[in-house]
Each structure stands twice: as C-alpha cells, then as structure tokens.
Length: 193
Image (cartoon, rainbow, N blue to C red; front, side, top):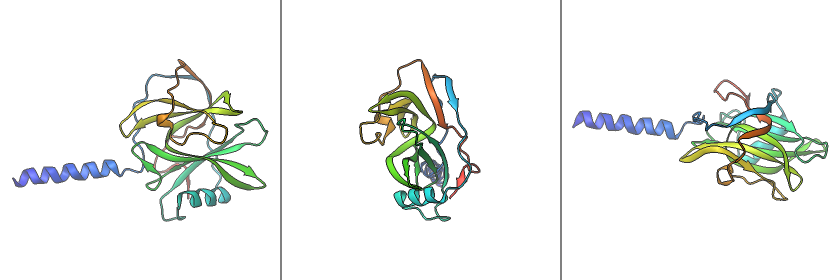
C-alpha cells in the first residue's frame, strides 16, 4: 500500500509540473509546406513604452512575473506605418495551449492595443492576402487538447479574432508570407521584462 501511495504522489506531482509549465511544449507539427515563408528576426532592443502597454494590459509587474517578450514591426494595413506584434512568454501569460500576444498601433510615440491574442505559438506568419484592408495572420495551434494545425485569422473591420484555435485551418498546401515571430522559445531567449 505504501509503494502504491508513493507512485500516486509522483504521478500527481508530474501532472502538476506539466500543467504549470510556463513554456509550451513543442508539439509535432502537421505537414505544411512553409518553403515560401520569409523569416524575420525579432527585435532585440528593449522598448520601455511597449513594456508599459503590455504590463498594463496583462496586469504584470516588472521583474517579478518572469516575463520575456519578442516583438516585430510590420505594416499590416498598407498605411506606411508599421504595427507592432508582441509575443509574451512566462507563467502569467502562457498555458498548455500557448502564450499571449498583442497587436499594437503606434501613434505619436504611443501604442494602443488593436488586438489581443491567446493560445499563440510560433511561428506567426503574415500573409499578403487581406481581409477588410488588413493582412491575414496565420498561427500554429496545438496543445491543451486542440487538434494541431495552422489557422488563419482575418481582420473583421475592427480587430483580429483573439483565439486562433477556433478560426479556420489553412487549406492551401503551401503557406506563403512573412514569419514575424519565429524564435526558438527557450528559458534563456527573448527580452527580459
């Protein structure tokens, strides 16, 4: 009986560690042809204004919440002003299905939140095709019991859908676009908040 209880405690502990892992497990990716995706490196320079915006949006405290972030700028609506996509990693913003992200518009040196995303994994791909004047976004979805696949997010006239897992799976054999968040996410990469 004692040996059985010991094994049960070990199993419960392992399950607890798995459920509370702030770094999403890299899932097996379904076959997808990404040969026509051009990849950009994420920015490496801290952005204090950007940090203030996402700290407020997710109620985070600098230096205490173990957050790292990746970001890139790209013009999604062809107005010649790049939007900023920021991907957050850490226990307060991640779960088994992925992590959190924001799409921000910059005006007069200040950021405003255009869209907020959950269940985000890398890569994040911007397609050339547009919906309501904004480029479509492709995100890989897996984990948390979700069927793995690449899902397409289309702009609805005001913002993008927040949950990629309930959006349509990309049907094309070949995904084309620009990969803006492609980093190998590990505990020692990204910008420390």
